[in-house]
Figure 1 (cartoon, rainbow, N blue to C red):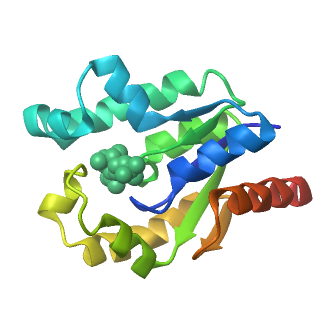
Figure 2 (figure 1 turned 60 degrees about the vertical axis):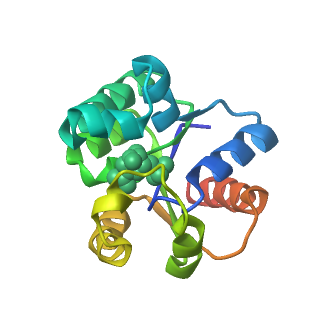
Amino acid sequence: MKGIALCGFMGCGKTTVALALSEKYNLNHIDTDKYIEEKSGMTISKMFELYGEAYFRDKEFEAICTLCENSDNVLALGGGAVLFPRNVEVLKNSGYKLIFIDTDFDVIKNRLESDNSRPLLKTNDIKTLYDTRYPIYENACDIKLSCKDETGEQLADIIIETIAKEG
Ligand code: S3P
């Protein structure tokens, strides 16, 4: 199995699905945000606050480049990663299949309602951000997975079946 990279809006369930994929299919999973936090010794929120978004995006690119040296991980990408063509290019050139976790907007909105950990939600209207990004996720992905109330495990099964079918 080649690498799988999960993309999609904040709160769509990338981390949950990555965990389910790793548990059920014995794949190594890495959350790029957690990886960046561990390497830098600070939270993403703090990084935005101290150094700004552009600095975080550089760290995100560096992390993706490093993680792509191994092409059979499951990567849960940050919600903004595929907005930057350099990230998509590295992922695809390394053989990763990009899966868009296309969760219903209402579900996402509910999940993020009382979230204080995501800096972009403090300065942006969530619906505007979602609408702007949606076509970019669609365009970047190899497979779009429409989801509403499936469990992480069910989505993991669908991903594995779809990849097996599509090759
Ligand atoms: C971001 C999403 C976050 C994190 C950062 C920026 C974005 O990840 O990378 O706050 O631009 O959508 P999650 O999608 O895991 O929340």
